[in-house]
Length: 184
Ligand code: HEC
Image (tube, rainbow, N blue to C red; front, side):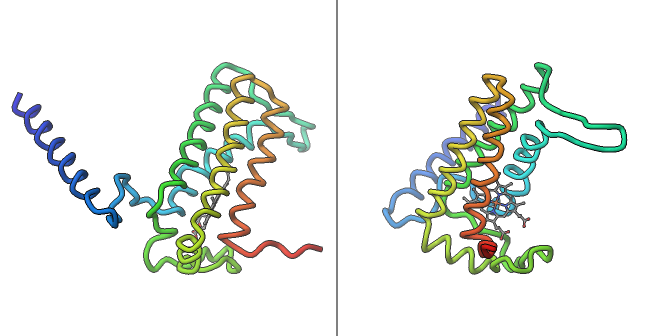
């Protein structure tokens, strides 16, 4: 009983803090927890779930022949559904304002030396938030197509939407993360 009362007290305290933080129109305190950076979201949510989707339909050729992989069992499709839901919610997370691009003082990934430094991306993000949100929404629309493909258990649609997903990643990356590859 005492533990329950303590929880109630904590809840009303946080409700009070939230209400007071939202008091001023200029308040920059978000009701969301924005401790995770965009880099965190990419590494923890967006990239692993996209990889699982891309790998779900693939052809491998090796010394033992041609192997075609695609989802078959209920468990395969359910796992893919979890991946897609994570991508849709990852899209929502990208739309939440107030995140840093990367931790303070973090550098550029050494494997991608041509990427813009995080500080520069941070400034671009602050100045061009609607552009970023546009890319995030486009990404989320593709994730919705993937959801339909998974719910319909449609392997072709899954494969095709997977390609669109790649383009949605690339569109945002070649604007905010690194310069677009030169046309050849
Ligand atoms: C709305 C914009 C946006 C979309 C959509 C997006 N990304 Fe990113 N992504 C970024 C930004 C900005 C960075 C650079 C962050 C940094 O400097 O570390 C990034 C970085 C990354 C990184 C590197 C993280 C690191 O540790 O350096 C990976 C991997 C990545 N994205 C994967 C993906 C994949 C896969 C998709 C699509 C399924 C995707 N992203 C969609 C904005 C986006």
